[in-house]
Length: 142
Ligand SMILES: [Zn+2]
Image (cartoon, rainbow, N blue to C red; front, top):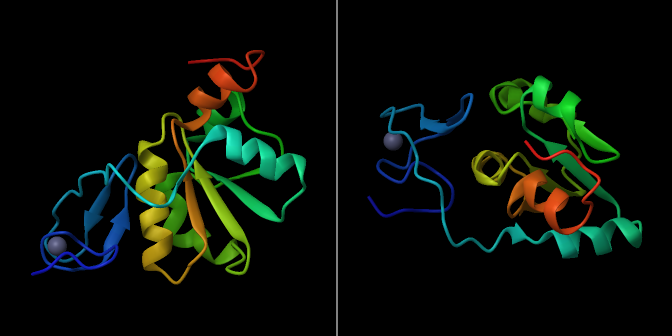
């Protein structure tokens, strides 16, 4: 089957988020990260959006212990494995920028959202690590 949109790359089935990965609910195939995507956004562009007070939702999909260690102001925490239930809390009309530690889990989470009726979704490339390195060196890196 042809790879279409954000469904399973093998069978086209529905994707389900787990702790650190995205699996197909039909064939159980563990999805590979999509390397080059048009939904990636850089830290610098995110910084600009925050400064200009653009109406965005910063969705952090890391685990609670990671979030409590370091997080971005005004970000919303829904850990990856709670996304299926938590997704209804999110506003489909706003731009959602998903972030995690290094950008891989958030890549999956962004695909999950895109598959579930969210059309305006971006993935913070390099995650909070990249932000702490390039934008705010006072932030803890782990
Ligand atoms: Zn599948």
